Image (tube, rainbow, N blue to C red; front, side, top):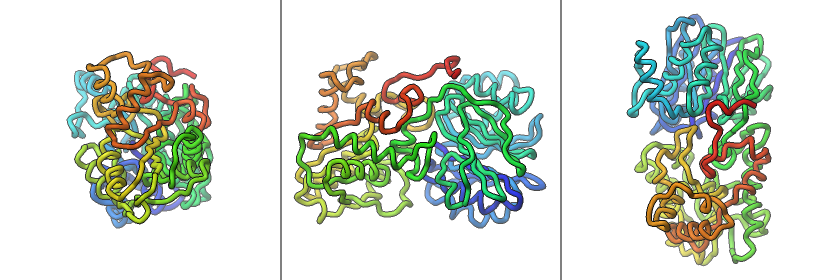
Amino acid sequence: MSGLFGVVSEKSCNELLLYGTDYHSHLGTQFGGVAMHGDKFSRQIHNISQSQFKSKFYEEIFNMKGDKGIGVISAFDEQPVYLHSKFGPFCLVSDGFIDNADELAEELMSEGVTFSEVGNGTVNFTELAAKLIMRGEDLIDGIEKMFEVIDGSSTLLLLNRDGIYAARDRLGYSSLTVGRRGDAWAVASETTAFPNNDLEIVKSLDPGEIVLLTKDGMVQKKNGGCRNQICSFLWIYTGFPASDYEGINTEAVRERCGRCLARRDKDIEVDLVAGIPDSGTAHAIGYAIESGKPYRRPLVKYTPGYGRSYTPPSQETRDHIAKMKLVPIKEIIEGNRVVICEDSIVRGTQLKNFTTKKLWEGGAKAIHARPACPPLMFPCRYNLSTRNIDELAARRAIRDLEGEDITDITEYIDHTTEKYKKMVDWIARDLEVTTLRYQTIDDMVEAIGLPKKDLCLYCWTGEYVKPGEDSG
């Protein structure tokens, strides 16, 4: 995912833009970027794969001038993009994944449109969104037309002379929240950016809603009300613990997930409960509270500088981060039966090679793995995470059990079936853990606290809202 932040201020917006954007650093690993507008536009983009956003931008951003600006922590593309368009000049940042990007790019090129921001083997999604917006009669019409033709998601912030246009994607897959303090209006992917910047939440944008932020306030340009399909993984893993989505706090959901896992564990003996930091920590705290077993830290994360091992695009980078960031403490591990809570098991390689291996080598007597969500069955349609179905641990298990790839995996999704049990046993053996028990879909939905119909569960169930079915 990518994290977006925008601010319109009565005075210079430099400081608020810097720190507001920096509070999204957990969402992306590749590029950071900012754009500001005062008398003219200024823009900076840096690779942050080996550094932190704040250290890269601290001096530069205070040399920029403007009372409004947008920032992004990008997981994939270089952003913001700048266009000198028929609607006047503007800068754009976006979050999402456009599954039919190649098809749309070919269509635009046949109309004479050119692309300048091409990298990673495909067109830049943010530039593609900008060029699609150009098909409209005005900016609002253009954003709506862009929403209509993409297969996937695109949430965006558009900066021009008017202010900042904020548009949440039509499925509401990602979140946008507007905040205010006395001298400024802001919009953010993560409400984590608000408290320490003295911003109060004003409104969470509805799916498909478009608003304009100026120094005078917020003006709604298009009603929302499209069908909500917010990503469940925001609460389980992606989001920061202090962030709220749809008014529901991430840390609280993770604790409830841990409680649900503990309630289903009446048949194992354990000495301590641990979470794989950072996202597994709250799940483990919930498990410890519910089970009455002590929460301890047999594995500690060295510094936040190593980032997340899930988001980098290359397996080599993911493995290196997973190996280096977790340091085992033998005195806590040795002789103990450990419940290890994790947000999810995606590929399984990191859990096996860099987590359970360290626990066994530290002298653990038993390792009980408890992921806080069900087995991942499908690559995400709406953001850049897993793109290959063969990467998924559950799919490798199914292929081995069936002797071939199969299309109907209904029985493997249903946790009450014998095939599901065999799949989980296969993964447990592969991970070299004593027991493995996944969260059920219903328990996860209950922990989040929204109706099931309002959540995107595609990566677990394969069900999604198809284009044309997204009306409220």
